[in-house]
Image 1 (cartoon, rainbow, N blue to C red):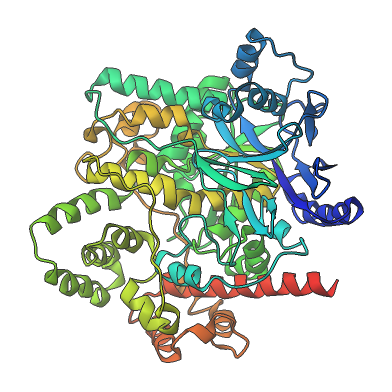
Image 2: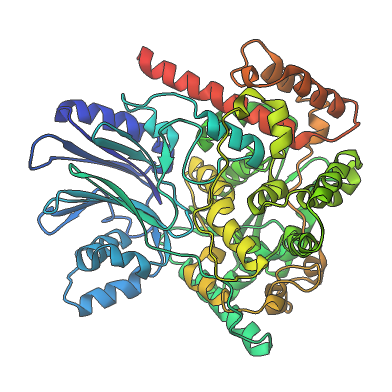
Length: 629
C-alpha cells in the first residue's frame, strides 16, 4: 500500500524534479517507509515523464522499492495497492518463461503487464491503482481496480496529464486550477457525494473503477475492462450452496492474510466484521488483534457487541471512546486528508480507529462492501417494495406520499426515508433518496441559482436485459455508491494513519460467485445477508446474529445543539462562507431553527453542508499557500 503521483510535462527535468518532490511530500502519510522518483524524456523530447512513489512496506520489505523497472527500463511502474494472488501469478508467469529478481507483488504486476498487456487486469485479485511507462510504445498506461478501492485522480492540461492518489498531491502541481465544478456541487446537494468520475473541482476526475487509461503524445483514451455481473440465480439455496459460499469467503480472507508485517481487524460487533475475525482466527490458528471505536454516550456506543466477539475468539482487543472535542480538533485536517467533504459522520471515528490500530499493526481487515454485495441494508427490501408498488399506482400519488416524510418524528425516520424514496419514480432519484441529502426539488429550493442549468448524474451502465430490481440496485451500489463513499473513506482514513485496509468482501471471485445466487440468499423477508448469517451461524455469537442492521451511529444531532453549535453556525452563516453564496439564506435558516428547536432532526443536512464548507475552505487555503510559495 502506497501513494503515487506523476505527470507528463513540457518543462525541463530540473523543474519536474521540484514539482514531483512537492507532490510526493504531500502524500508522505501514504508511504512513510520511503520514496522514489523516476524521470525520462519521450522520443520526441517534447515531454518529460515523471513517476513518483511513497512506500508503505508490506510485502518483500527489502526489495519492493518503486518506481520499479524491468527489461532494461522498457517498463517502469509506480503502484499503489496489493495483488493478493501474486504468488499464484508468479508461478504462472514462470511457466511462461518469465524470471523474477524479487519476491514482491510489484514485480509480478509489472511482468504480468509486460506479458499480457491490459489483459493482465482481469487476472488480478486485489486492490490497485498504478501507472506504467512503456518506453518502446511511448505510452503511459494507468489502471484502477474493479471496485475502486484504490484512488486514481487526474487532470489534463493542453496535451499533458497529471495524476495522483489524493487531491493533496494534485494541488502541488503548478497547473492545478482551483475552479469549483458547480454542477458537481449541485449533485452533492442531492447525493451527499459526487457520483461518477467527476469531483468538486472542475477538470479533476477519477479513472473510473474497472477502467484503464492510455496517454501518449497522440492523445488520451479511457477503456473499460471489468463489468460487475448481473444476478443470474444459477444455484439453488441449500446447504451445499451455503458451504460453498463460506469456502469462497474463507479463500478471500486467506489471501488477504498474506503480509510480511503485523495485521489485525476492525471489529464493530456487526455480522460482517465478526465473521471476518472468526475466519481470520480459524485460518491463522492464533488470536487476532482487533480494534473498536465508541462514544462516552452509551446510547450510541456499541462496543459491547465487539467485546462478545473478542471474548469468543480471545482476540487482543483494543477500544477507544471519542468525544465532541475530538471531532472539533480533527475535523478540518481530516477533511483535507479525505480530499472531499466528510459527508458520512463516521469518517471522524474511522480516523481515530485507524490511528489506534496503527500503534499495533500495519494492515487491517474490514467488512466494507458486505452490505452492497449481500443486500444488507433495509433499502434493498424497501426498494423492491417501492418498485413493485409503483408499477401499479399512478405517478401523481408519488408527490403526496413523498411529502409525508417531512412531518414524521425522528423515531420514525426509517419509515420517513422509505416514504421519501417512494416519492421518486426515477430509478436514480430513488437511489439518491435512500442515502442522499436532499430531493432534487428540495435541493433546488435551497440553492435555486445552482440548479438553473443542472445536469443530473447519468449512470453509464444501465442494461436492457430484464435484470431484477434487486440486481440493478446491488450493481448500482457496487459501481457508484461504494467507490464514491465508503471505499474512498476507508482508503483515506487508513492511509492517513499509514496503515493498509483490506476488504475481503470486495473480492472479484467472491463477487462472481455471489452473482450466481438466488434472491433468497440475500433477503429473508426484511432481513438481509441471509447466506452470510447461515454460513456463520456456528461461528458468531447469537446476540450478533440477532442484531438488526444498524449503521454506525454518531451523536451529531445532540452535538449540533451543544458542543458543535457555535462552530457549525460560523461555518454556515458567516460572511466568509464559500458555499453560503449559493444558498437561499431563509431556507438554510429554517433548517437550522427546526433542528435547534428539535422540531426536526436535520443532522444529516447540517453535517453535510458543514463538511462541504470546510472542504472548500481547505482547498482555498492550500491553493493560496501554493501560489504564495
